[in-house]
Amino acid sequence: MLNSKFWQAFFALTPIIVFFGFFIVYFLFIFSIFSNIEDFEANGNISTSLIFGNIVWFFAFIILTILISFGSLIFYIVHAVQNPNLKENNLLVVWVLLFVFVSGIGQLIYWLVEIVGKRKSLTT
Image 1 (cartoon, one colour):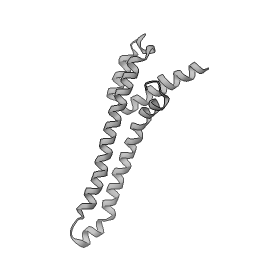
Image 2 (cartoon, helix red, strand yellow):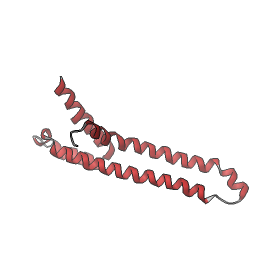
Image 3 (cartoon, helix red, strand yellow):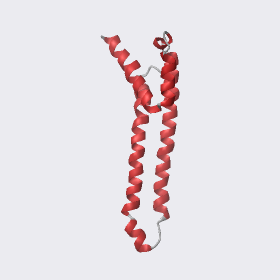
Image 4 (spheres, one colour):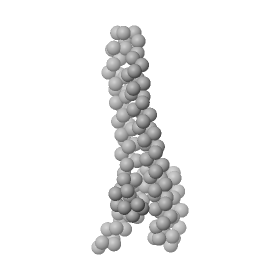
């Protein structure tokens, strides 16, 4: 699984895609609240089903983002530990610290530099 191109790309790209999807869902939630503000003022009460229904989607995206980011972190830490190119010098510590402190972007950079970049150099 660690050497599968699909899973490497999935765990590198998905946290960032889901993160931006989270913001889209957030803005849709805010837009739905503001688009129904006239109904709120006319009726005098706020539809709790509208608000709670949108909050459920909002929290679902939060949980999905957390799970995918955590899975990506574990996947790339294991991949970096098993990468023989990083054991020759101290880059393993640098990559693991980058994964931990710059989570989604760190995995994307590692995937581009260490996996895709090395794959292209091996084929030429």
